Length: 266
Length: 171
Image (cartoon, rainbow over all chains, first blue to last red; front, side, top):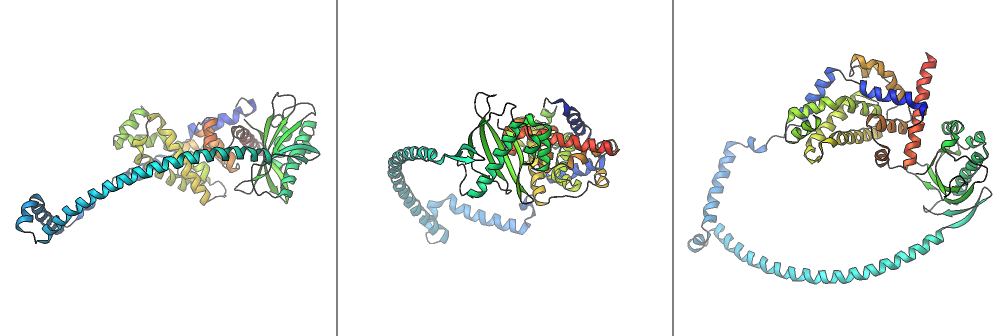
């Protein structure tokens, strides 16, 4: 921020950050809680009773014997349930392998079909893109707002047209007054806080120039999550070579719509 | 030195992490309390944030980005808390003095002025002057146009100036 009048404020804020210190008790408690919070969780197995652990060990030894010598087990003890299960598993494995082969073939077929579909979709997308461009052109229309003819661009849907015109009128009237140098009158279109700012800092909102502003484009209103409204206005005032844009935020205050913020777009 | 501490903490060195807590706790607490306006809540938020950061510390690729990573967690947690528990009570000197040291008392008036600002002005000043973020970084966090960032900072400083001058006038 190059503006000198805020140097003291900025300096104070930076000093606040440097000088703000917590006491040792706060530090001690915080550290203790944090270090407690970062301790790893305890391993559940440590708490398993010895008996359960022993049983688990015995079962695993028994299973391992059968698993270590499966062929012998199948030959000499085919009817033992676990051995029977092993034989069934072998057959299952063969079935799964065949199924896998079938799936691979099917996958290849599907991939080929998908590639065909992809090509068709790309062609359709291009068609849609062209149609969208045509629609965008249609969405722009010339509209009369506060005795000015301005191109309106629809950037949001389902707006109430009466409200739309009302807020657009507030914005255009505000800009016209600013360019005439009638800052107090312009401030009447604003909230109290913003109006005060406008009166004291008009050059922050509008480029100074003669009363020759041309409005080139305005958006329809867009409602925010808070119930406020946004409008964007493009204009040319012969100071800058190209159009520039002003962004407006509008809120309802005591039943009237007022500008709560206006700023130049980057 | 901070880089070394972060690297050591990434390897599981808790002592190193403890020193990072000492280094950054005051700053994070200041950010949290500015937003939530409650000393106890700010303390809880900071502690939870540090624990969260420790659990994800290995994912930090550059040690120099530890502070901004920590800051973003404290910021998000503070914002979430504020949304759920919007506090509009007078600044409590007694409460906050339980947490701060004696020398900080002189700065509490300034903190009080800051907390009286409209929430969006307060937040942008916290990001700019407490977190030392650049305008484009603030733009990404707040998801507003760059011009709005600049304007909002200006309005916020104007308001802060009015608050401070109001205090001097009263004196």
